Length: 400
Image (cartoon, rainbow, N blue to C red):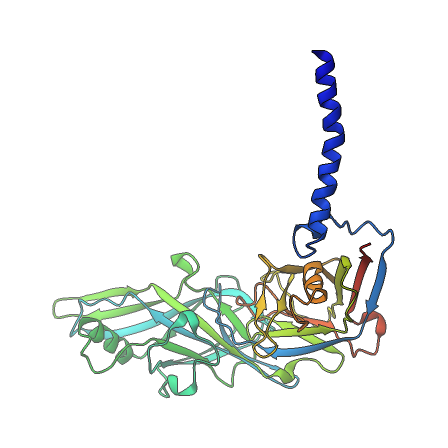
């Protein structure tokens, strides 16, 4: 009996390694699948290196919606080559419908400062408040979808100030008739003046962009309107709350430092399409490692605690629309030291080399781009200092 067991174990000792070899071989025949995971980046035996700094970058503006952000961003900020401007659209979903015919004695719009500023924390924020002329879907609202004609021309409130302290309250008196119309419309939707919400638009007196708490936070921090009313029987004070908001941000491409640099910026948002001079390698190549390295110009960048320090990398699959694929969760470029960012993109390069996808390059952006206006300025491939240019390295081996 013991001898029989020993023989069975001996067979397993020989069979299991054979199965492992077959499994790995099968995976290597499909280098875009599981087999890639068996190629260790630390295994340098017999590998070849392809190094290049011949990389082209294309900064472009991607129209995104900031809906879901943690800030209402309002103001202007001048920069070399143009001006950043941010207005916010605001709608209240809890207008009472039981005060038809009441007289509005006073009304005040309240904001709470979130202590985010782009870029001057001590700068002036100045704006006017207008009515929206149509019902805008905030969830998909972008700088391209909201036009000047969507915003009225009569100002119902004006503000100019320098909020600097965390949770500082800003009170803006509103025209009584504005709230009177809201209350009448809530009681009777046939009322002539409709309520589509407000546009808070910066004026020329604003020299910084500041962030105010929105509906993402607790009730005590959210925007609200306090109204003093007089009815036929009494005077009363009501609060209009349940806000919904979205920021509409714009800046020209000319604000990006050039030449020698490219910029990834939240809010606007500026993204970058990067293409590599990547020759076709032999078909039987295995990509052991492919990585991109960028150098950050820290002095020119503006990165706060409100942003992720990573850069998202996605493969471009359409040269016209710059549509991308994320490969599950995509790839993230991480910061290795004070100026160095690096990302491994083995799977993307393998697909290029296998002609599974054309080489249209990659797209880079910050994962927290809807939240603020932080920007990352990187040295470009045309920078005079070769040591600071983007570097692309592929280490590969030939399958026998």
